[in-house]
Each structure stands twice: as structure tokens, then as C-alpha cells.
Amino acid sequence: MRIVYVNGEYLPENEARISIFDRGFLMADGVYEVTSVLDGKLIDYDGHAVRLNRSLEALEMRNPISKDDLLEVHRELVRVNEIDEGLIYLQITRGSDGDRDFVFPDPETTVPTIVLFTQAKPGLAENPVAERGIKVISIEDIRWGRRDIKTVQLLYPSMGKMMAKKAGCDDAWMVEDGCVTEGTSNNAYIVKGNKIITRALSHDILHGITRAAVMRFAKEAQMEVEERNFTIDEAKQADEAFVTSASAFVMPVVEIDGVALGSGKPGRVAPRLREIYLDEMRRVAV
Ligand code: PMP
Image (tube, rainbow, N blue to C red; front, side):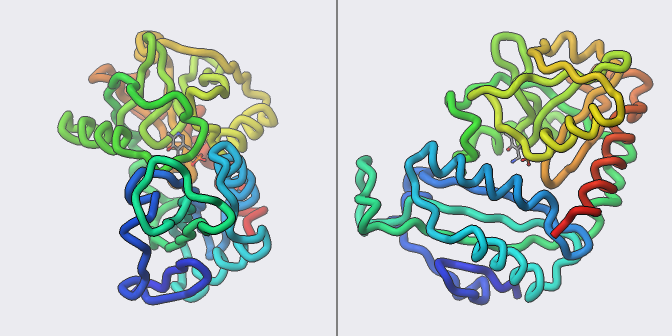
């Protein structure tokens, strides 16, 4: 049984409790982060810690734990749960003041709820799916306008994954005004010639931690990166495509709405970037 962390305590998962009035539960009033673990170490931990604070600030929510303590909790959970490869999920909600009300509770008297748990995922890095690539469908992006805040409001992304599954595919790319915003749980890219094209950062998409690292590595490897909108039609004519996220790293996309990209197999760029990302991030993991 897993040991999880809830509001300052390490507990067996079946003994962990939060209130039925917690605003995370009632109103999706909470933010989260997912950090991957390779070789028992945290990948790009700082990036996730910085974005966590950004999300909290955007929602005027207090961080209930210090930077040092939060790192320690991550490490302790990896240790006690003996995670070699996997994920650490972290969620902070606005907590509970013992009732349901749209108005935020007084931050002086209502402490945020903090929960962390691990997910063992052997084979996260040597993932056979990355060898064959994933198939995506396109769906309309009907999410709210602050997708840059990493909230736990994940119903539509979850529905998007189900639509993909029903269509015999792996994931969905969301489209707004004809242009791809992002995947249900990842950032989206296309490759044309030597150029990597991905949507620029704004309120429209999550500012992926993996995206930032991958774009840095791509530039260092002399690849050209263009941050601009691209349409779903342009994507279907691309040489290659891929997605990035903390749990998928760099994952080739080989088909969009039934249209095979290039040879229908992972191309040159995405597998290379995956390799560079894993090598470089493993080296600096904490
Ligand atoms: N976009 C969305 C909508 C996501 O949910 C995620 C992953 N949580 C990402 C992009 C990728 O972000 P990261 O690389 O920080 O995991």
C-alpha cells in the first residue's frame, strides 16, 4: 500500500482524509503538478515548483508549504514508496471552511489542502509506445480562457481522451478557430523540414515544463523552432508531429484524424529530441 502525504502527515493511502467541503472537491478550486521520477530522482523539479507558485498566485491562493519542505516531501515519498520510475502527483486546493459558498473563504483562517502521492510507472522512459508513436483525433477546444493556470478542472481533457479512445486513438488535439491549441494533457508540435512549429505561450495553453526544456535542447541542437499558431490542416500535411509532457516526455504522433504523417512511423526529429531530453534531464535530476 502506498504512503501518501496529506496536510503535513505521511499516511497509508486508505487512512488519508480530506473534508467533503474541500473546495477542490466542490468547485475544482485547486491546482496541481506532476513530476516524473527516473532512477529514483526528480526530473525538472524546479520547473514544476516555479509553475506551482505561478498557478497559486494567479488564483490568489497561498502556498501552505515552504520550497525546501516541498522538495523534501517529494523525496521522502519516492524513498518510502521505493519509486524507481514513476510520477509524483501534487495538488493544492483552497481548502475548506466547513460549508459550500462561491465566495472564497478568508485565507487567514482557511488553510489550503495539500496532497501528494506517487504512481509507480515502470517503463516510463523505455516506453514501447514511443517506438511506434501515437494516433490523435482533433476535437474542438471548449475549455475556459485561463489554460495557463494548471487547475484540477480536467473534465473536458478527460472527455477528450475518452473520445479518442472510442475512435481507436490514443489522444486528442484541441482546436480553436481552426488552430491547434494543445493536446488533452500535453503540448503539441509539428515538424516541417528542419523546422519545429508550436503555438506560442499565452493564456490559451499550459506553459509546459517539458516544452521549455525541449525547446532549449532543440535550439542547442541547431534545430529551428518557430512559435506560432498552426492549423489542424497544416498539421495533417506536416512531415512529423509530437507532443511533450512530464509523463510522456517527447512522444511522436504518427496519425491525425486518420491521416498518416510522413511514412506513418516516428520520424527523425521527435525520437532524437526524446533521446536528448531523457539524457540531459537524467543528468541533472535531483
Ligand atoms: N498541456 C496540458 C493541457 C497539460 O495538461 C499538460 C500536462 N499536465 C501539458 C500541456 C504539459 O505540461 P508539462 O510538460 O509541464 O507536463
